Length: 347
Image (cartoon, rainbow, N blue to C red; front, side, top):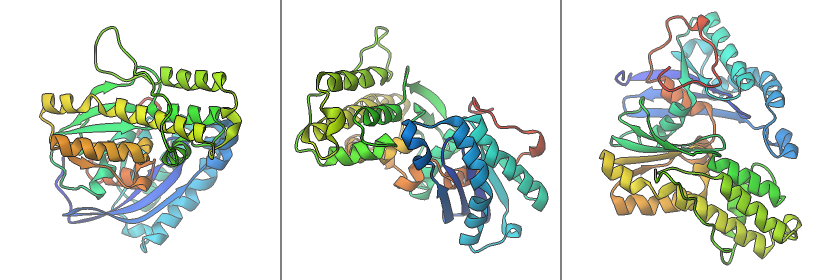
């Protein structure tokens, strides 16, 4: 990993799913400093469908990308000539969405003669924690949890991720989205379920955690979605009751208690096994208030140094890509690189 540059201005671009984002980050000897962050959401476009429609997302990114880049640079109070590097998400993600900022970034790098680097999306989520915890002790457990990922890694530094375990089926964020859809609470599901759960006087009956015949540590959230579906079928009133209904609130509270408990349960044993000193939790689900509170309790109990980015840096954003890109070597021939929907770490 390269040593910190005393001052490097990096433009970071991210469009792997349905958010088009750009940010300017100043890399300093003390870590990254956020100079600007612009994010265009597509929630209103995809909300009626209850999930992201890839073709609509890609088309919207094409309309957004130029203005998002220009606004990020303007908010930072700099010009394009002041940039030392451009970093962009190379993958994984929806390939049509990825190509929007990927192609625009290469064109800008060629036009202005700026060094360019492609960044793995999950490495970006790890580096989102650098803004609040640049001195995080390593090795660290890294729980990356979103609508598309529920993975646990071991990081030896800010540029390495070794997979320890992952969900066997659906991601935790998808469980939030699908449950919110079944309860007609809105999209995206994570924030509305969280808000609903916080108003509950008590939780509904707890959900039964999954069991695996091979006995290996893992996660599974497909059964949780089915369990919510069965409860709604047994009590159809829930689908129309709304967020002010006490039964809906109790169900949301039980749902997020289950997700938080299941996610954190294997961490103490794995931290001890691998000698972890730090714990990073990032990705969209890291915005969840119950998960953040439970993680703080776990960290205090186990002696782990906890790093959870502020909510706007947990969801997909250009700042995390810029922070990761500042620590990577620029590509010698960016023009031959391409976006990769199934990009593997280290590729």
